[in-house]
Length: 141
Image (cartoon, rainbow, N blue to C red; front, side, top):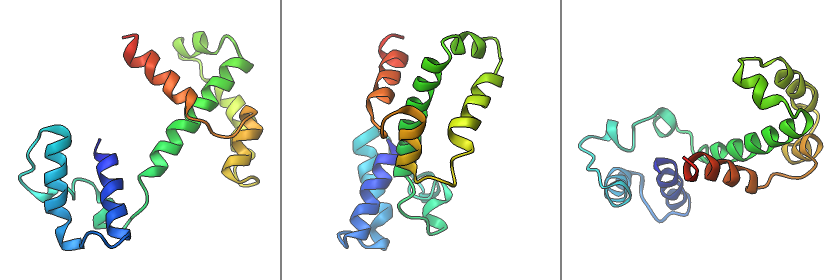
């Protein structure tokens, strides 16, 4: 949830709807609304990690893209190697690593991200596989 909050605050900053000096108060108010928790100091609130204090803006949406791509890549790897889940359960990562090296690692600098995903999985990045993963993980638990 703090990633969503960061994104919303960054958007307000970029659009000029929020002054930098007002970030802590905005964070504290929204954090309490979202999570029901009060923030007592900035180091536990808007400065809880280094992104903003180091001047990094626009970073948090990349987490989402990474999650979407990871779920999609894993789905394709399982299709290409039906015994993959059993191998991973035994702590055997060699086949997954070989698949990643062939489909992703060796292509990373040669293709833009969307082309890489299409080449590796047969389709551009989609959210459906991550949603499927989350449902299986949390709804079936």
